[in-house]
Image (cartoon, rainbow, N blue to C red):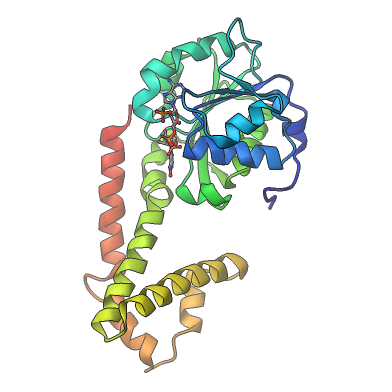
Length: 280
Ligand SMILES: NC(=O)c1ccc[n+]([C@@H]2O[C@H](COP(=O)([O-])OP(=O)(O)OC[C@H]3O[C@@H](n4cnc5c(N)ncnc54)[C@H](OP(=O)(O)O)[C@@H]3O)[C@@H](O)[C@H]2O)c1
């Protein structure tokens, strides 16, 4: 898998400017990843009312910040504003779009249909759902494209998203609510696990600071192990569980009635339902 720091041919050879709408947390993380992959600031246009330090520094190296006048058609436009901002933020993008332009949106809940209505007819659009570890280049993003997206544009979308972590594609947009419930909201579940482990450690007699450190390092280290070993989660769990031992005693509770499986099933179903209600 490519990691930030490696240059990417399709980013270095863009046939036109790359426009970023919204350079907040997600937009800036992407910008940083693209730079590390060899995209020149001269190829970048940023539309952002309150640019941060990174964007201002790049503007001194040729990035165009909120340019005036008739824009050149973009090779790609990445939409990274909050979903509620979309109705006012999208119309100015029309001037940047022609037949070759790929529009890639990471707005949660904004559908391909909503985007197609707001943009010129026939626009190639990809909707993507990243998650917060994107901030350190370790996100996982799931993408879905409309029928106008060519193979070349799909590759470009993958390369643009690859700058903030791994990328998966689905063919059916209806799956995006379950994706949002699993990986989009998922970091919060993992943080909650660390919180709950800390509280349980304190209840078992540990000083609060030590319990918090043990929980944090255990979650982070286990995540690294899961990432670096070619074994699935169930096998890793079985490998650390001796029959009749301490881990087995805990797992009997966690895997019993009303345990982890049941709770996460309910939680992810609730998040999927909520995603469906909010989509538009
Ligand atoms: N954070 C996540 O984990 C996550 C995960 C999945 C998807 N997403 C999606 O990613 C998108 C961005 O999230 P974020 O956390 O990066 O939000 P954010 O930090 O608030 O960034 C949005 C940026 O867009 C700017 N903006 C607002 N209106 C604008 C306009 N009309 N034209 C140009 N720029 C405008 C905002 O400026 P002001 O500050 O001045 O308003 C802000 O800097 C959201 O749609 C969210 O659903 C985020």
